[in-house]
Image (tube, rainbow, N blue to C red):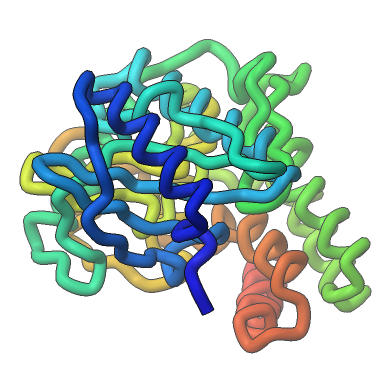
Length: 309
């Protein structure tokens, strides 16, 4: 079965956008699927001296893709870290779908990363977290965590514990309960964790600019360092980004050592990692249901409730 991105109308749209972006005619000479690394059909169109990363979504993806572009624009404008560069306007309509386009990067895939690549992840997050604000959240700038809307409105108390409870764990818990995939006893246990957050969250941080969905595959390892993709930024606790790096697959300690070379971590960070992953575990359970992945993450929630509730 042909890949959705190889539809003739899609290929023509990519070639038109890339030609306008480069200022001279450009044609695709090959395609590589990246579906295994993306929630939408994705891949790289390869051409002479320049290649294009493309992600295709249906009618419902337009708002999500706009949020993704805005998030990268914000990071690009507020920090020194590298981000994926849009091709042309970055987002174009194809039929009843949306096509997100950026310049493809020379990358070392995650499965072939070396120690220096992991050090670059830590350095990139440290540079991002150097950008501070006076409030947790990001007014007027909501995003998406996976398929779920992410509410970034600041909360009245303006503490990390209150923001994490009201804008991250609480909403993720409600979605997981509504999905029918979270047993009632576990839901009650997560509720007890929410009630205890003021005593569990450790020293109060200054609100720092976060990637927001910083699992390690949302960074591209390039010869010039780590480049941010698929971000949903807001101002929050730096430890959350660091915790999410390894919430699908573990990352080596070199990441945290490199981060500490730039910015210290508060005592107790290692004990709080699973606390910061809790909202993400609930999101995965809501999205994947009774799959093996969902069952695995259900077990992680059981462990978190046992530990923190």
